[in-house]
Length: 155
Figure 1: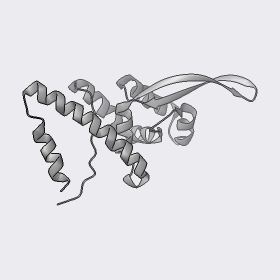
Figure 2 (figure 1 turned 90 degrees about the horizontal axis):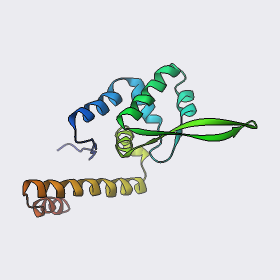
Figure 3 (figure 1 turned 60 degrees about the vertical axis):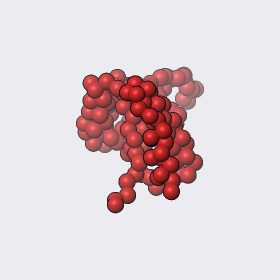
Figure 4 (figure 1 turned 30 degrees about the vertical axis):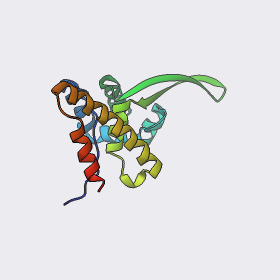
């Protein structure tokens, strides 16, 4: 049996929202590059993204960031900073829950520490446990069946 990375992609429930998110990320190589530059935790500043992708037009990079905000992959904000004694406004982006998982989809497993993996698995299992519990209630399924599957995989 082939080994697989147990990656789970969190997506909104509505199919139209799913399509918009997936299309915005996988529509072009530059969209993937922009997403790859976003930090999983914390803010990534617009000027840093534009600078690192200087071989692409600023307009193209900014359009992808705008699209990511529109579909809910990232949140944007601005903050005031002092540069050479002047006050300037700096735009930043921070991934949403879905954004984090999309970034992780593009992150090599070798680039993740044991602490990162532990955090991700805890978060992942939390999301899926809630989803499984909700679906079991909704469809009258026995949740212990799924626990048995997990327990058997530990053997």
